[in-house]
Length: 348
Image 1 (tube, rainbow, N blue to C red):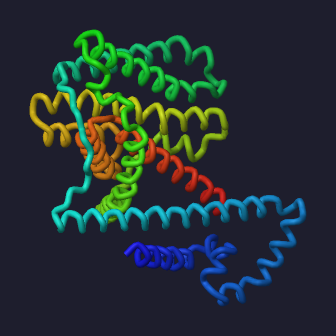
Image 2 (image 1 turned 90 degrees about the vertical axis):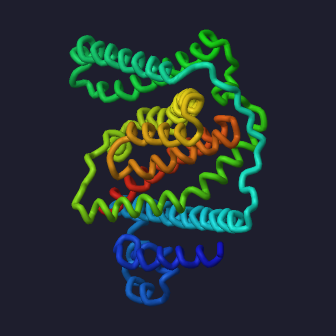
Image 3 (image 1 turned 120 degrees about the vertical axis):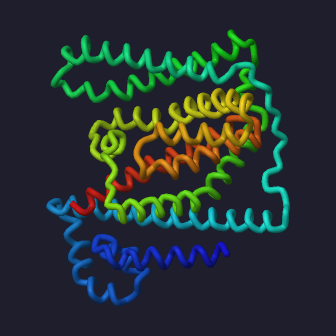
């Protein structure tokens, strides 16, 4: 089944490539699609290879490198997606045979904090954010207005707030309720095993994620719905400063997932689970998690991701696997944005 899915996706990429002139013109597409393209484009490709040696066609050389990277990315993507399908088939077969899928000895420490403490954290977060916004607008905007630095403030503010709330949660657990950090899943026992398990879980989740996203996009097109432009997406597609991009990537791929998992799965999930049970806690945390992440297009895929993260936390009793999954997901999203950024450069 792994081979069959790989072949299917491979030929789907070729068929898709035939309809896009930029992909069709690439050297990899020529090798894959056969002699027809080679005969049609041989003279143009020979001319391009000569022109690339001259300084006046440096842009063409850049486009060639971008095409190579996009081809490699597409090939790796197909391999990863095929492996995910293979894992899903194995999981389905195990379900049919009534075998256990995830055998992990999870040890949960009963949380002493409650649902009201979640609201306390949220209130403090909103108040602190409000104060930071006032400081930014009153004091800093007039000082650095027109200097191009103001765009850095939202990401810097996000980083400050994430670290502050993380510290506040640790205070609630350690000082107020006198519990170990293991109560919110912050433990390193069997970390390597749990990281590997998180990676496999995300691979198996990718085909499901792609199906949900494709379904949502089709429905949105049928109802003529177009989501509003996201600031973060615009940043990764248009930002020129390499240092600002590096800082943004660290925030989105590393700091953000750690903070969100500690808050949603470690703190909120345990409080809701204590009051209303596992299933309610999974659904509620996934709903809020998805609601805070943007538009209608992303709501259902992100909610599915939230359910997976809660499931892995419940099964393992540790945040290591959910954090691994979350980091992998955000890293893939950022990679796709840079893929889109290079594709835009290619078609310009």
